[in-house]
Image (spheres, rainbow, N blue to C red):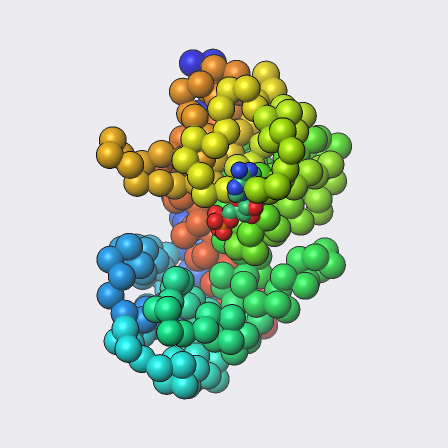
Length: 286
Ligand code: ADP
């Protein structure tokens, strides 16, 4: 293997430590420790694991764990009332509605009730609009984590060719906007893209978020490129991403592994967003 392996676990740990110092500084400046309200509806095992990790790491960073849990059969009005209650509660700095919700619930209508200032997942229309306009706001955690990795490894972005595979609201679209804000020349690919490998081979920075195991192989990687794999799939022999890691690592200059790449960054950026939200709400800067 020739590529440098990007260590998301280590970068995430550093980000969380920095957030912990920020929380301590906020409290020392007369502020209140940020409160993170994770909201879990039902008992989906994967969601339970994610929420447990978010709660544990928020407490480790010195935050208040304001977790709420409703049964799987909670109706739309009940969940809406809970979101409204958290929205009005000054102890709550950030509201994280764990997705996916049970099928009978409408996630968009619930997300719309989260005040932009407490939208630590960066999912509201208001925060998406601020990002599109290049104005300050809370950014979606996964693409924000990718940017933090690129910066930590000093990957040049200004004028670089960046290709994003995927156009989801959660990852692909905000990813493209964040790269554009840093003056990359951004191409967005999707399920209708003709000759995906050919487009990907243009990339100095290739971010893959298509949700398809092994979609991107070495034929799609320009020699020396930085390859960021956002995909995560549970297979028979463990976790794997959207990128054929072993093959791509022979061509790439740097590459994220799965697990241990983008994954750990997502929670770290959630904590960073929660600290930012608390600072803004309390009017105490960094
Ligand atoms: P995520 O939340 O990880 O971004 P989604 O499953 O919500 O993933 O979205 C998958 C995205 O990947 C979509 O935007 C889709 O257009 C894109 N995609 C799916 N299949 C392909 C493909 N074969 N080539 C390129 N992009 C694809």
